[in-house]
Length: 136
Image (cartoon, rainbow, N blue to C red; front, side):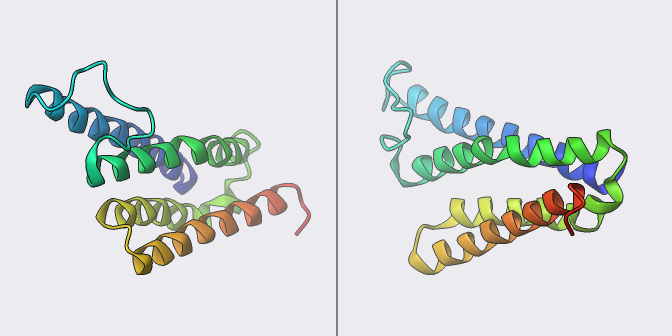
């Protein structure tokens, strides 16, 4: 499996893991009697601080997965993973770091760190798109 395929599968797996964490968070509230199963806001604002952060991490994953997956799948389908492989593991590491940082805290320094991880991911994606389009 190429590093690009590992990153692609890793991003999908991380997104699934985050939806499971969100599900367990909500299930815990239902079983403890603190929430009704049909009484959750999609925004997660009614889940407390950690639950809200889990909701946002999950949403950020599904908001960003399509673009990343498209670029990586294009590289795989066109046999151009030589372009994406060198930064593929860094890309998924940055995604994980962004998510974990968000799960830990929303204090201003942590938000800045998280944003740095996000910008780095997007820089990699832009580099990949330009390289795959043979513009670099």
